[in-house]
Structure formats: structure tokens, C-alpha cells
Image (cartoon, rainbow, N blue to C red):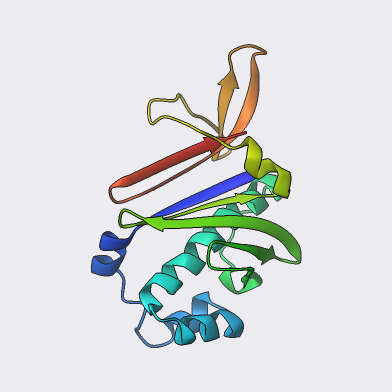
Length: 161
């Protein structure tokens, strides 16, 4: 399984005030809040963590069919600034994040070997949603292939394996 998330940093800066009272406590675990407070760029760390949580949640949703809002049950654990794991209700998800061109982009996979199989989709790709979960039709075998799509502000990203 795969998931992804993209954040337009300029839009996030204009539209979100993560410094308002109790916001961090509703979204981030105590360990994640420590990462934010210790970061040289706290804004970037907030959106880095959020992007990882969102990408990992997409895998959880696809695997379980469960939709919900439980950010404190999704916790980021860093290997380094670009890679790390996300624990979703006890389930480990692997992530890779890139930060450039005013965006944060995270790819999440259920198994590490999936990173090597990730293929980008074009914006024109015909996406089919079944119960809110996106797929594309494999033109050779006439079967559905899982995809993950994300958009925020100026940015759109889609992937498949």
C-alpha cells in the first residue's frame, strides 16, 4: 500500500495559525511537540510532521476501510530529516519526505521495498474512486491499481506502484 501528501508552504503560512492555544496538543503527541519546539524552523517541522501523518493515514484507511480523525494515534518517529516511520494505531508505516520549491512532499509505503516501485501519475490520469479510495485502471489487465493523490494550493501529486 501507498500514501502521499503535499503541502503548499505559502498557503499553509497564510491560512493556518498552528501557534494558537491548544492546536499542537490536539494534533501532535508529546514527543512530536518536543520535535517542533526543538526545531530550528518550527513552521517547517509542523508541516513535515503533518504531511507524514496524512500520508500514513491514507495507507491505514485503504487497508482497513476505516475513516476517522485520530491524529494523536498517529505518531512520527524520525530516522533523519528525510526518512522516518509513522506508527498508526500500532502499525508501522515508512515515509520519505522532500522539502523544496515551497512545498513539503511525503510518500508513505507499507513495505520499504515499495519505495523503489513508486511511479508518479500525471494530472491528466483518469482516477476512479471506490468508496472514496482512488484507483486507476490497468489498461493491460483491466484490473484496478491503487493510487494515492494529494493536492494543496498550487501543488498536485499522484503516485502508484
